[in-house]
Image 1 (tube, rainbow, N blue to C red):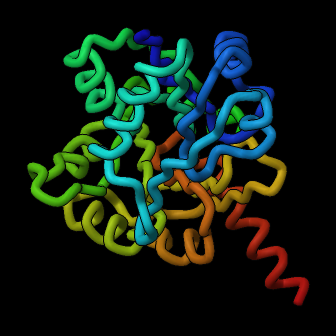
Image 2: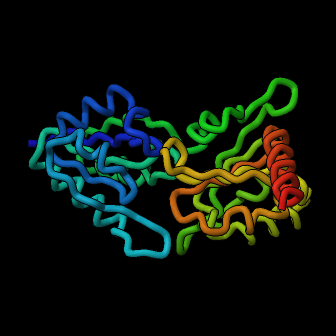
Length: 249
């Protein structure tokens, strides 16, 4: 028997942001291979066997070739196999590697989209990533480059976009700010740093690119760096609030 492997987007964290299709597939799953940060509330939607295969920067991670092999083996034993990924499978989720491997071995694959972190953060902040007449381009980038991979063009992409969302960059926030400023972006460029978008314990900070390192300090959960003029009003409000607090002291 060869089953179907579903690459399912778990979204940014809130269970009620799952699509109806994602919830249905999870309910039908015989086995679920899930990322490290998928909340228990979402995992409980499946009565099938749940196997963690997470990747976290600086910590133990399951090798991709091992994940591929486990998906293939599971598809040969079960009708419905789910690979549950945080956010959207097709945004920095290494979906291409899993899809290509499975198709090469004759396994049927379907992708179920999820809400990616940038869109969840935008909705939570109430700030559109685009704005008529002001922000017409949006870039999703990551500064992380795997061993043996070609250099990233993320800096050039951010400099060319009106609004940018930087994934997996909180731990390198100081270097990111320095690199972008050296590349020509003003230190005063408005930024927002959002941790655990869509979850009740999420945090947010607004400020300027030059202060990014201090803004992102202490953020340990999944964190997104957003920058562009669309965040100027929120950044200005944050400065006024900080100044008011300082005067009150």
